[in-house]
Image (cartoon, rainbow over all chains, first blue to last red; front, side, top):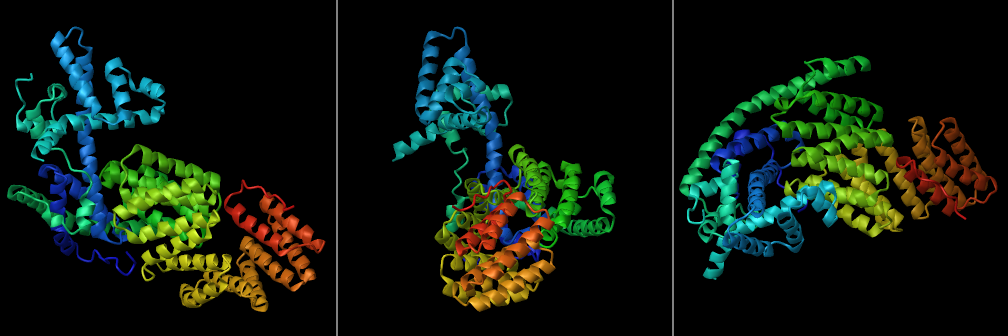
Length: 179
Length: 461
């Protein structure tokens, strides 16, 4: 895109601008499946930020859509944290139960082994150490050679992969059957 | 548990992380058993990947399905938000005007009083004043580096006193603080106070690491930090920072800022000796910069391209481009821009073997910078003039220029290594052994050491 092709959208009339972007905003929120009740804060914060910074933004529509996409992704990232913690704790508790019924214990180990097969190899090693041997984050960092600062991010990424498998396996199976 | 399935609604709340911790764990345990039924319900609840950009680019955005109920719910929210935002517009305009007024008031006071008020007065604890200080601090960097530091310092003082509620939340506050500190770092960089610049950028970076920062502001911090890294000749780091900033600008569709990034990357290539890469990036950057909206940036890019063409021995092309660029320098009109134009004319003339034209140009530039007390630039122009005299075999004039330049540097107590480089040149001139190659080496070193005082000059064998 050259400078001549760039849209020169001035924020000359806020109301005109808002009606222009309205259809795209709805599609964007629908695409990212943001519940309507949570849309209000995200949109209001972004639009106010645009008003405060309008002199530094050359193409307000592109800025707004880009900013909202990022906020939608952050929205999900924040929601996921509770989910990852739940999966992490559930597996740890289940593995640590002193005497689970023999069949149940074997099923869990087998289910977990299946789930771990679906995550990337790097995550597999990390999650095996965590769930089978109960390693905490500092120990994982030391054992796998990660810096203490980055181990949290890496663990979260691995729990994300595992959770996605647990949640989406049904969808994938359905798709495979359909295909 | 495996026999009792959570309801669809519960599963939806689970995916959103909205259930109490105990219930979240129970469902996670249930899912671990591989419950196909629940997985099928949840597969559709997981958010999509970030492929919206591709759909937007392909013009397929309207193809995204939306049920009527969902559309209506969004419409209601949009109506409410738009109403509030339209009402807020006038208020923000008033706040902006008030911020400008506060800035004017603050800048009329003596520096100590300004500092005191920025630190203590509630009236000056103002978001728009802070925005104004950041903006004005940046502008002052082009004309008056010390004033730029003073203003940027006030910006950090005000930013650090603000609270989340002053800035519509944590993100607004962190973004403003990060920008204020990065602007101060940049102001120090422009005045070659690199240790202070490093300290200010450390604060800005810590805010990037800790807090939630608006994307555009994050890119701005990375962009300014890259300039410091270029000055320090830490090119690999500069390259990484510029790539990160460019990614954000592309994501936000801010093509003019992406163009600026390419110009910065061109500088990195040029400093690393990749002349072809430099020119390619400069052309791509120029294509994205709107000369009407960003005349100063456009002119700087053209200037660098002409210089790069000259440096790579393509003086004819440089001459042609200079001819078309001259009106932009004249339009800029300030003394320094005109001196830079004249300097470039001298360099291109020298490249075209028009030695006498080059001599006149370099003499004018040397005198001009001297009159503005910009001794360092005057010294660099002097070296170019010495190059002309060497080409003409005027050893007496080379000696005179070397002595005069050295005397100015000695009187101003210039950086030791710069002085060492000039001494080598001066000694060679005294012995009538100064050659064009030595002039280029010393001149190149003086340009580099200016932004990186840790460099050491080693005399060519």
